[in-house]
Image 1: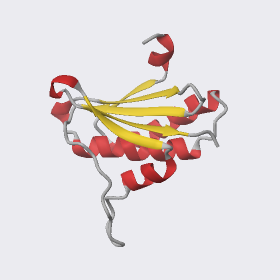
Image 2: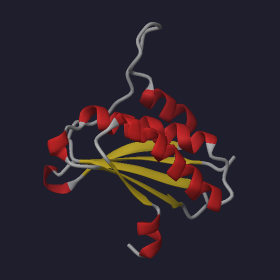
Image 3: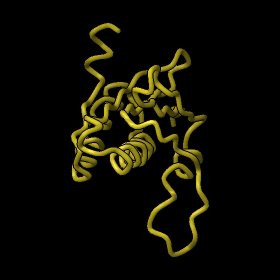
Image 4: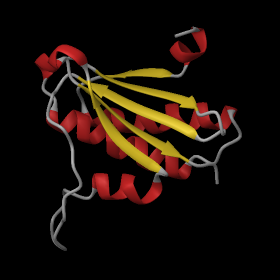
Length: 131
């Protein structure tokens, strides 16, 4: 990857309070691309929160990367060192958890998971159209 890819990458420390910094980073990057930041911030918050929720200190940092697709949509990916693959769950009306990937699914053109070689973790990605 070139220098542009490095500039649009954030290493997320193991602390749920860092999600506000994630949103600030997303606003900065997508703002430079002239893209509305509401949906990208929402999706990034959910993907990073999921990664932090399932990772532990020994798993290392979570990495958020942003890029653009050939048709000018936003490509977002979150990498972590756990091999637990996420899936959309049905949350009941009183549950405070379980809606993250449902939200990602609703606001993304598509999303998915790519396991890393050698059980080194996974990358969860989402493609978000310009609004």
